[in-house]
Length: 127
Image (cartoon, rainbow, N blue to C red):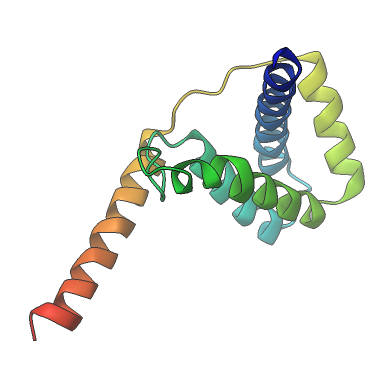
């Protein structure tokens, strides 16, 4: 049981470090615009206090943190040039920084949920 807890702690630490690396990468001036755009979305979603899939939903609630977020990080890492990514890794390991919750990202997620909900309501129920 202790081994599983340690693996989860390690997984979470790696996730936090990778989010910080993405944060540094999208602020890097040499990062291509498409990699910056994708990285901003991943970092904003990771730091948002509101998830697309709420954590109160059993099993599905943690899928975004366990599956979707790591896949997004891998996708963003594949778009960023290797030398920039390596530079950001070095910077992240030498200057650890805590990233705070991102309330503007939370507002965007709430607006997406609201627009999806209203469009479904209008399409199927309020004809």
